[in-house]
Length: 203
Image 1 (cartoon, helix red, strand yellow):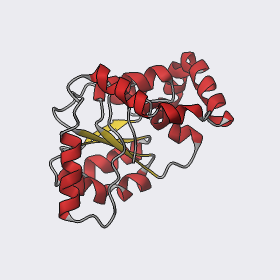
Image 2 (tube, helix red, strand yellow):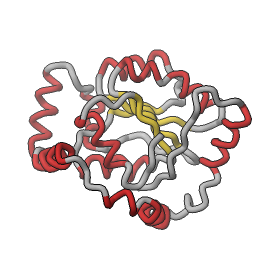
Image 3 (cartoon, rainbow, N blue to C red):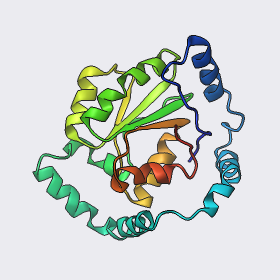
């Protein structure tokens, strides 16, 4: 799992600022060695780990780990309800048929349709800098919107279920260079990103 320190894109950033941010993503010094990168990220943030996670998040993580054996039954039920795509259920377990593109990859997460559409402007600005985009969401409707309204080079994946195993598998496969989350509203929606933050800082 790899990542870089948080890169914040100001809403009023001019062309010069955007170019500087692009160069930061592309020139990160430890990108060629994932193990060094993850270790260096850990060292840089060691101080932040001294502050315990909120108890609600700790409890949620333990429960999500304990519920992993029930994932097949949950997926089966959601398939019957039309809430999952039968051809892409593996993505919920962090597995993907798609190949990670070469070069910097920016991960953007939007929980559902509203958040995905709200991220459209940011996605276009990043694409203009020749950065590849990995866009995740959690609903079939949002996936349909991405397929219909976003360029073909924007990679869409369903966000994995909140299990350490599934999220680690997702991060190991995609190795995002940087990330942005649009409007985290609950512990359940934020936990995959919190797990990702162990080796990737988010703006």
